[in-house]
Amino acid sequence: MHLEGEKEVKDAFTKALNVYSNGNEDAKKLAEYWFFETVVRIHREGEGAGYTGLKPAGLDPGPMVPKVDKALDDGDISEVIKHLQNAVAEEITEHFKHVMHSKDYDVNDVPSARKHISAYLHLTLYSHHLYHFIKNPILHEKDEH
Image (cartoon, rainbow, N blue to C red; front, side, top):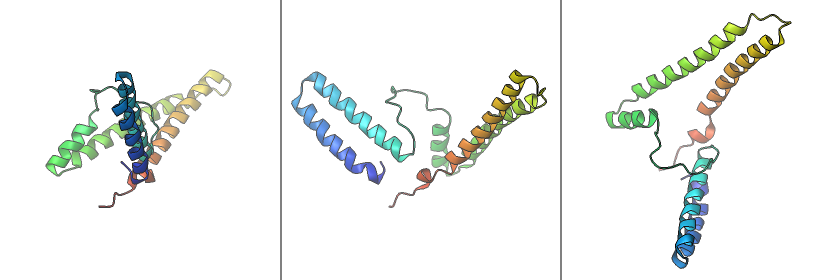
């Protein structure tokens, strides 16, 4: 939890505990749900990400969480870096191929021009957003120990 969100989480806990302690079963369920939503929302804000609601338990975390955990156990981050480099190269290459495939369109063929511009925008915006996500200053803040 980021430091700026700590007070709000503590306040939410106090309120939820009061409702939970003094309410019926429905109130208890609502208090739990509201508290978890609050914690996840504040946590996501600290990551610089939007809150999209609570997710069910047991969702597949994808390949990166286990790879990072293994890297921490092994003391070697190289497999994480390699996997990310490969994923980025694969995605950007696919976007690039679509642009190259559509670039020699007839300027009088509006649907073909739209297809090319769409492919160009996908490549450009994908690269732009990926770069800004990687360089996001919120993700680079260091916890003070």
